Structures are given as C-alpha cells and as structure tokens.
Length: 234
Length: 216
Image 1: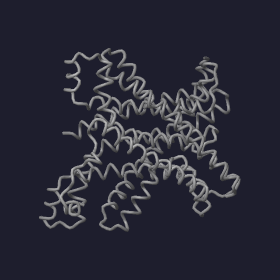
Image 2 (image 1 turned 90 degrees about the vertical axis):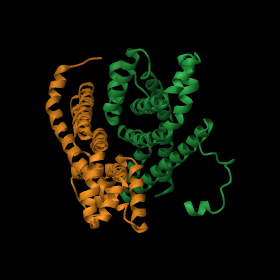
Image 3 (image 1 turned 60 degrees about the horizontal axis):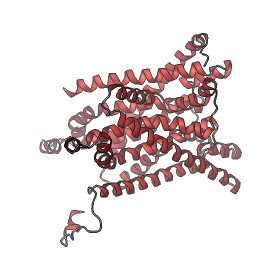
Image 4 (image 1 turned 90 degrees about the horizontal axis):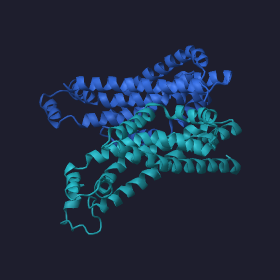
C-alpha cells in the first residue's frame, strides 16, 4: 500500500461518510413523516403512508438504486448527480424501515398520555409535539441505531454504480496491486470502525434523550450506595 | 415515459431463469444461516472465555460490515489462498455466513426465553447435557423463534441482488445483462422491482399464517 493508494481509500471514506449523513437525514425525515402519517385520523393518509412503506420495504435496496440511476433519467428527463441519486434511493428505502420504528414507538406510548392531552384540549399537533414524541423518541433510538448500521452497510451498494465510495476505492486498489486480501481486510476494518463509532454516538444520544424525560439513569446525583453492595452485585 | 410491452415479453424468459437462481440462493443461504447461526449461538454458551470471546468478536465483525465487501473478499481472496469455488457457491456461502450472525441472535434470545424450570427439571431427571439440549431446550427454543427466522429469510431475499456484483446471474444480473444487450433499462428493472415486492409480500403473508399456527 503506497501513500497514493491510501489517499484513494481516504477519499472513498469521505464519500461514504457524505452519503451516510445525507441519506440518514433523508431517511429520518421520511421515517417520521410516514410513521406519523400511519397514525393519522384519515384513512386515506394512513393508506398512502402504508403503501409507501410496503412498496419500499418490499423491494431490494440495490434494485432501487438501479432504478433511480437508470429508469428515472429517461422517464422524467432529469439526471441526478450520483451522490443525490444514491441519497434518494437509500434514504427512501431505509426511511420505509424507519417509518415502522416510528409507528411502533408512537403506539407504545401509554394511551393515558394521549387521553390526558385530549382532556387538556391540546390540538393533535401539540399532542404529537409535546406529549407523544418526547416520550417515544428515546425508545426509538436503539432500533434506529441498528437501522443506521444497516444504512452504513447499504452505502457500499453505490459502488456497483461506479460511485467512488470506500468499497469502490477498495476495488480500484485491488486492481492496482493485483492482490486482494490486504485491501479488503482494511476496507472491512474501516467499515467496522465507522459502525462502532455510530453505535457509541447513538448510545450517548439515547442517554441524553432519556434524561430529558426523566427516564435515564441519573448519573451525577445518584444516591450513594451502601458500601459492599457494588462488589457483590457485579 | 415510454413503456414497451414487447421488451417485457422478450425479458420474461431471462426473468424466469433469474428467479430460479434467486430462489436457489435464498434456500441454500437460509439453510447455511440456520445451521451456522445455531452453531454460533451454542458456542457463545460454552463456559470458556477462550471460545465465547473470539466467536463474539467474529460475529460482531461480520454483522457490522457490508455484505458486498464480504462477497468481494470471498470472491477475490479465496482463489489467492488456493480455494476455488464457483461464483454461485461463493455467494451462497457469503450470504449464509452474513445472515448466520443475525440468526445467532435470534437463537440466543429463544434459548434464553426457555424457562429456568426446564433446565432445573432436566437436572433433576439427571439428563446428560446432550439430551438436555436436544430433547428439552432446543425444541422449545426453536419453535419460539421460527417467525423471527422467517423475517430474516425475507430480508435475505432482498440482499440476493448483491450476488450480481460477483457475476452470479440472479434476477438483477439477468436484468442488467438484458439492458446492456438491448438498451432497454426501464422494463426489466421495473419487472424485477415489482417481482421483489410481490415475492416479499407473499412471503410475509405466509409467515403470518405460520405464526398463527405455531401460536396454538
């Protein structure tokens, strides 16, 4: 591995990170919009959101990427920059999975909370924003963390379309060196490190959000344990 | 948008070939992931840190890295090490290995959900360890986890197109080949997109029926 090749790999990491951030943002927005819409009063809104989730969860992410790259341009006459095409395909696919998480999280909030909001004559929007979401979001973080790792793994798919992400630069280095074991080991390790950092980040976020609604373990002001219990309880 | 039905009918023979390959991958990959996942799950219960720790690290690593790169690794590195296998075999092993790290978690949850009383009863009856597992714990644990395993079969179906990247001609591979020969992209890609939605929808209906039967 020469420094030039490492530079190539680093560029790939940068593209992967960009794609990850953009599609994660899109997926989050879509997930919340569709997930909340699935609990809407009107059946048509519920139906449309349900149709979206079923269609995008039903198809394969890679087929979706091919579709966005090859079918959209001739069909609608516009060509997307590869980064945005990848973002669109990944964001919509993983957003559909996220919508199910959001729906599950909203349904898991104690119905009495919702009724309390109605009794206080909150508007539906106020109930959602002030009562449901603050309690539901911390519970959604662990499944969202898993989904984020899946999304990271999904970003490797754009390399098939020739986008210069980490997996693609790995292929280029393989062609340059005519040797695969080393570079693919490095690429896998880099993906693993990114996944590890994401898990850590999400865990921190979960702690913070839970503390915000008084659920998390209170770290600083915990009452002092009697000596000896800590050692025995492991 | 211009839609050409003759392109669809030209593509259909290739589609059936691709579908057959996709289903083969799915069946073989599922078998590998079910068996290997159980092996991992049992190994994590061996009372020795020298076994559980490496198994934990390896499975965590495989689970958190992209299947696509793992497939490249197997496809390009194994021949360098003197192991030659067809693209199809490599792909099936890769996808089975990847999903075994997921099914392992499922089995583990199933084993942990078996009530402690069952373990105690097995001890009280003086059953050897082997009988305890094969006759008491596993039949109960596996029955519990069938629906969750089914979900992973469905997500495996949606990962089979990745095998196209290592030259396996499954549905997406056939569609791409057809597109390159005829310059028609819209029809084959839409056909296989719809096929994926239909197959995974039917599979989820079948799974729900199975779940209801197992509940009784």
